[in-house]
Length: 188
Image (cartoon, rainbow, N blue to C red; front, side, top):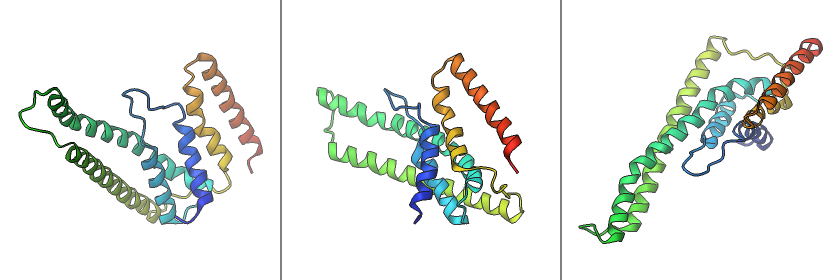
């Protein structure tokens, strides 16, 4: 979008938020690219650049990661039929030959079209929503309230919660309380 520094700042938030979600085994992690690119598109379309202005687009775009993962899961389940026919052909049980190149091309085309349509519809919807909210003056972020460091620390809570330990949860709650207390006394 032309602003590498802003893109990196926003990308760090999404990476930290989903730090503990690793694609191991059959688990499909959130689609961080969809969330990240949609957020950057929103910010670019509306000229948003400050941390306070970034909070709302980030929160709006987080669900796209989970929806993208569900789309990927749906596509994999749908493509299992092709895999089953390939296995039958490899064992010699298939009545007709399987064209491996065609299977791969169909799979790539289905995935590419589905992900493009999902992303296009999501970004178009979000741009319309943010446009309406701005037209009605419902989207006025408080300037100076957030800094990029605040957003990065908040996003890193996902990594802390991944520890799945009562001590980690207690440390997180204590840290949040300290940050809130400091914010109340030191914000203008």
